[in-house]
Length: 378
Image 1 (tube, rainbow, N blue to C red):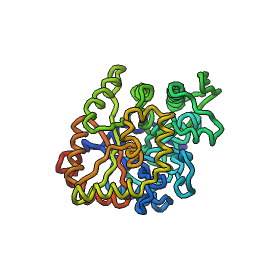
Image 2: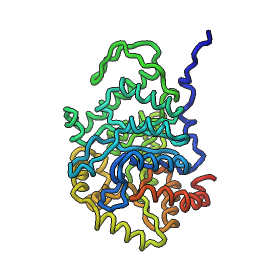
Image 3: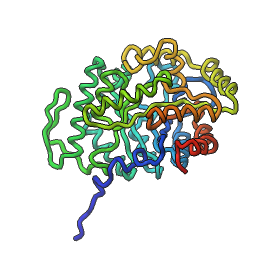
Image 4: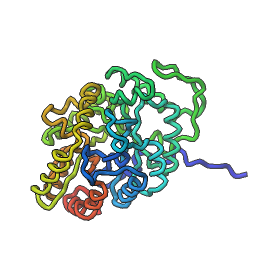
């Protein structure tokens, strides 16, 4: 009888769409699984969340050559204002469907570590990695929205303690993915008896891990456990120093990390038109009730927002969820992309007020200019 051969541990993460990409500046599309995406606005063109819209965006991204797609993990928004505004797809089931219906893109799920046990997460992640043929990646977050925790009957820990939980979470899940025989685990936060999980992920020793903590505790966690550190940048001029500091901190413990940040793109024929559109979407049609609640919750619970001044924090939260604004003509946006790339940024998580329009505009207008600028290859 022929033996059954499973494709476990057959691909290195460096062979996947992100790390295997020949492009100097990698791209990921951020937040296509939530109502309005990253734009806190009542403008009609923001994302209307249903499965067909989400899938249409994902498949356009898959065909465009953009390397990855990253959903937002949230169980509810900090303030409930209406059922329409609170629409969010859970990221693991979303990622499993996306993995089955795409061919090229790296499919992320985003996970609150404290809300998902590592044994459950290990099995779910392995399943999606098999569905995708080794294209899965995980964005891990310690969690800042206390309302999420309250819905599950949990109390959010203090900031430093969250990352102690996160570190033990990573220790356990990596052990699950590498041990072939049942084992016991006796940690401070997690315990288990006769733990075993088969099959293993296709990616060996584990799928790609991204972390977005910008506080000192978050950055310490990321440099030890993550393959990609997602940096918050208030002023584009600060990018070289932030990248250098991030890489140096990882190198101190013998690791190399990719450094990504986010960008909110509004591209028009003239800078005046682009700025007028931002004024319309954010200042005229902005949902300030929801925007204020997000900022208040993050100031209270997430030290990642400490890098932003009070002057910019509200508008930046509403236009790209703290992304770098890339607003202007195509030429101006390419120049900003060149600047961050030359400063050492490996990739951008991009979003737009209108995702369908944004992906199409990227493929038809921005991509040829990025190729000419040396940021992308044909």
